[in-house]
Length: 251
Length: 363
Image (cartoon, rainbow over all chains, first blue to last red):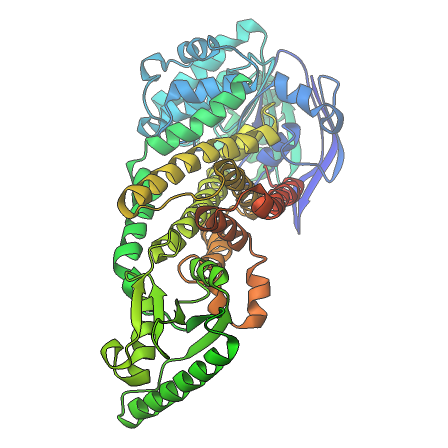
């Protein structure tokens, strides 16, 4: 579905993305896991056509941004890391505006409001929403075109555990529809709860990839050393991350 | 018209009309400004005073040469006396000989404060000016007192000039309307675009199949409608309170209004094309609007500026717009007179729009 081939992006002396090659198959939920500055956002923004790679190639559904931007904009569902909406525009109006960008009718907004559980807030100004509700609205905008592929950049950052779980529930509900998901996160539990495919990134490079089971098996010895320091019997994603990078995700 | 375009235009309106403060600044402030300037500041002094001297069969050039020489001597003597009395120097007054039609036109354009014609008896003269124009009254008093102690002593007459378009308010209102278009567009489009870039909403919108030029055009359309409402509100107030009238072609006025809005929309899009910093955006818009507000003859005629600078001042879009509107309001102009400036303004809009689109930072 997405193919990233030897992609690089440098900002002055910083190697934000340094020769990454990845394939994302259809129907999978993939987490790009890494600390701040790992290069996750730069990588997804290049996949989203918002930034251009310095070198390498990105293909989505067999197409590239240079030639097929309009097509790709139509089929992708995107939630950026940070978007502020217009304060005195209602939730329903915001969704309907974006629906019209995709050539969708007036029926799209109520359907998405239902999906993101904001129907009762449809007439509220965006300025009156909680942070969690705004994140759900942002997710709603990403879903307004019924995308095959959803790319979310840290969709639950800054949310309390309840609000985070609400977002996870919405994303789980999309699975039976065959939606593919690529999300960036620095929450281990988010990657564990939602994704069957985990890519660990740090300093612009991919350090490891696989299911939690595969990663645990592959890095069992290294993770065991980490695990001993906290007296646990099971290998967690955090142990694997520490074993690979020498530090915790939140450092 | 497609649904996305309609939604985008409606968005501007909703945002605009749901903010009471914006409504105050957009509608009430220009009216208060017109009232204040028209009633209160309209009676204050100008800096430079030019007296028109009407040449005619009964008052040929030779008559006026003698009169001007006498007036100049008297003014110089009065200036010396005030300087000697320790009350500062004299006033700068110049004289221009011209036919009556041109005198009235110059008065409308703010090039002269009043004009003088030969009176009915002997060497007496008659002054014509708007009695509500403080600058004109002061000029009259200065000349008369220098010549010999007021009208009673000289036998000169004063005629209140009530020709439509010669009052200060007639000069002021078209300028304010032009300035309003500029401010409204630069802040209402330029600043709004910068603000939505700062909010990162622009990149979110650009990451959809939305047509980017349609997005910008929707801002122009919404602002054109808001401007028209603002324009009408200020004009109707000026008409009701001050009796200001459009003496020229209304379709030409509409064309100039649209062309002016186009020019400033292009400039607004160009100005907002790169910056994502509120202070830089604020500074940029002020850097564009402030010099034009000061130089384009909105409040006082730029004809008082040094000769060399006037050529440049006339090239400013706000000068072109204000002059074209003033000539329609006060001089009865139509398409023949304002067609060229309107086309230039429209072209300025198109060029800046194209340049802005070329360098626009969407993400």
